[in-house]
Image 1 (tube, rainbow, N blue to C red):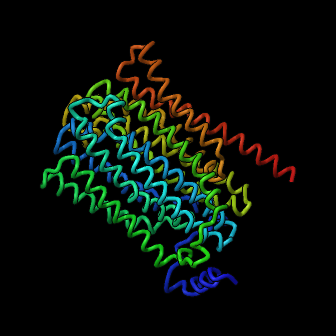
Image 2 (cartoon, rainbow, N blue to C red; image 1 turned 90 degrees about the horizontal axis):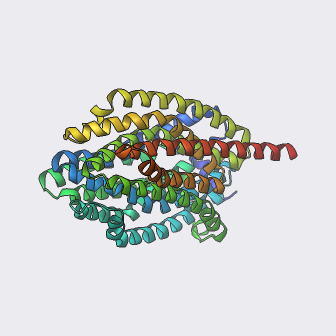
Length: 467
C-alpha cells in the first residue's frame, strides 16, 4: 500500500477528529452534488467580487467619478494579464481532478506539487510583463489624460500583486479539484472584511487615493492566499507530500500546460476583446466610462452564480471523466442548464426594474446613473446566453476540449472588436453601441458554445457505441 493510501486510510479512520473536506463527485445525484459544491464557490466569488465593489464604491463616493473611471479603465487590461495564469491554474485543476476521479492517489500528490512549480513560474512572468507594459497599454487604449496617472498607479499595484493572487488561485484550484470548495471560502471572507476596512482607512482616513485602494486589495489577497495554502498543508492528506511527490514530473507538467494553455488563450482572447471594447468606451469620455464601470461591477455580481456553477461543473466533469462515467457528464449538463435559465430570468427582471437604483450605489452624478441604468436595461435581455456560456464552458473545459477554448475566445474577440465598428459606422447607436455589443457578443458566444457541446456529445456517443 502506498504512503498516501496509508495516510488516506488513517484520515478516514479519524473522521470524527479531523473531517475530510474532499468530495467524490462520481457518485450521487448530479444536481445535488453541484449545488452543494457550488454554494461555497458562490459565496466565495461574491466576497471576492466585494474586493472590486469596495474599491469602486469607496473610490467613487470619496474621490469622484474620474477616480472611478480610472479604476474601471484598468479592469479589462488586468483581466488580460491575469488570463494567462488563470488558464494555467484551470489546467492544473483539471489534471488533478482527473487523477482524483480515477482514484490514483500517487499521481494526485505529484500533480499538486508540479502545479505549484508551474503556477510560480507563470505568475512571476505575467506580473513582470504587466508591470512594465502598463503605461504603454493604457495610452494605446486612449485613456483620457485627466485619469491616466491614477489608472497607471492602480494598474501597476495590481500587476505587483499577481504572484499573491496566484497563491490563492493555486491553493483554491487544488482544493476544488479534490472536491473541497469550503476551505478557501473561510479565508476569503476574512480577507474581504479586512479589504473593506483597509479601503476605508487608506482612502478615507490616510487620503492615499487610488493607490490606497489597490494596496488594501493587495494585502487582503496576500492573507487569503497564504492562509488557504497553510491550512491545506496542515489539514488535507493529499498535501502531505513526500520526496517522490515533490520531484519534477515532466509528463504531468506537459499535460497540465497542454490543458492550461488553451484555457489561457481562451481567457486572453476574451480579455483582448474587453480591452478593445474599453477603448471604445474611453472614446465617449469620463461619464460613459463611469457608467460602464458601475454596470460592469453589477454584472460581475450577476455572473457570480453562473461562474460558481461553471467551476463546479468543471470539477464534476473532470472527476467523472477520470472515472470513465460520461453519462453523468451529460446528466450534469442538462440539470445545470435548466437551473441557469431560471436564474437568468430572475436577474433580468431585477435589472429591468432597479438597474438605475443599483448604479446609484457607486456614484452620485445623475447623468452617470441615468446612462448606466438604461445600459443595464439593454444587456440584461441577454443574460440567458451568459448562462449557456458558463454551463458549456464548465463541461467542455472539464473534458479538456482545447478546440472549444479557441472557438470561445475567437467568437468573443470577433464580437467585441467587430460589432462596435459596424454599429458606429452604419447606425446611429452612438454610445449605446457599447452595451449592444456586449449583449450580442454573449448571444453569439452562447450559440457557438451549445453547438460545440452538441458536437462533443455526438462524438462521445459514437465512440461509446463503437467500443
